[in-house]
Length: 145
Figure 1 (cartoon, rainbow, N blue to C red):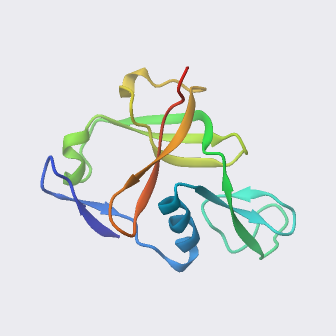
Figure 2 (tube, rainbow, N blue to C red):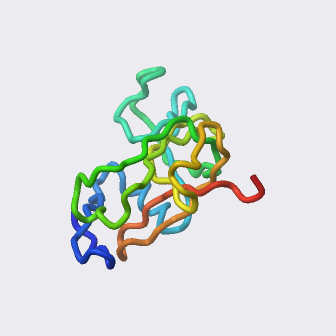
């Protein structure tokens, strides 16, 4: 992981490194597309990337865009500072989003007070550019809900 400087604290946040396994995921995020792997053997969608399909054990997969829409499956509100780069954001939510396509995705939920989050809440993906190479998918409550 590399570091991102947080303007509020002037302390670097850890950000993911682009590995060969995730290059297409991050390329999609830079384009504003949420990407997951699709098994070429059985068609099951998965994230994070794996060498083989847990459903059929096929080793071939391709990256495909998904809607970026889903619901909160579960969440945790972080009250403790585990890394100084996040000190200015506490409390913040880490959520598991079940996408409409079935894949579960771990991210942050923005645009809502953490204690107002509820399981089943409809959400949609947004993208936060943190460097020229790294754009991170995050989620927000879906408009009109």
